[in-house]
Picture 1 (tube, rainbow, N blue to C red):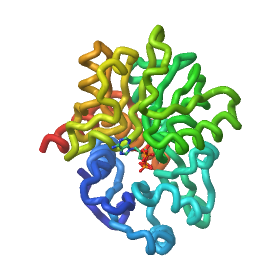
Picture 2 (picture 1 turned 30 degrees about the vertical axis):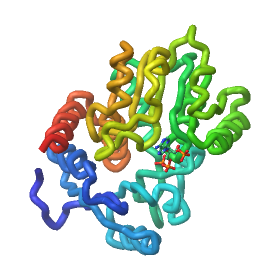
Picture 3 (picture 1 turned 90 degrees about the vertical axis):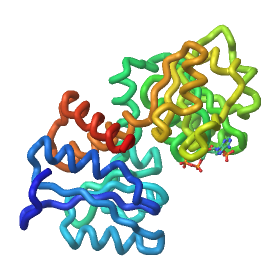
Length: 289
Ligand code: ATR
């Protein structure tokens, strides 16, 4: 890690809660490896202070910020500019300093894309199932629709929420997405195999024995399963995928790459796969430690 001095630039993450964030591990190690005079800290920001926090960050000449729960949507109104992808997704996780304020980006979805590329999973023309219909699921649906998925099924416990997302995506790309209730997963065509993205918080520590669909017959349809959850490293969803003979991946690489892409935006540098891998090792150490 670099020595903090008068020229050190400050980055950070704002959220509530934010104490358990892994982002400082990503960025402080990247700064160390790349020799950048940068320090990254976590800032606990409450809803009512969000606007002041952004203004203060600008006034204090912060280079940029990450934004996490619960501010990813509300921060948009505090921005000077927004990247078109982040605007379509409706959620911002990265702020880059610009003239007079910050420009907002979403690196979560490009992070998921880069993780899938790393894992050799290609969804071009493939049938993809999204589990959940919250903010993350909506972003995943938008990302898949924009990147040549064949057809998307969005399955949620509360069907109207899945229908809302489907309506929105279909208005943008007609016939792209079908909404189903979670209980109706039996109606999916069993002669096909699907890439499944688990986009709910179900299974996250400490509820590690939970999966959004427990029925093993569902997992026979899975070709590759992605969990957005990264703690525990192997979720119940992943275990069920693997027990059915499918590939399964944790959300930790998506987390890695969303950070890598944010760092690239802040510094204008490209982070090599080799360096990204070093950071991944540090994240694993931090999670096990
Ligand atoms: P985020 O914005 O992070 O995606 P969210 O908006 O709270 O979070 O969405 C959480 C998702 O997890 C929703 O799809 C939710 O289903 P409902 O829309 O039916 O609430 C899903 N979810 C949470 N707990 C669940 C559970 N025990 N079983 C099934 N789905 C669950």
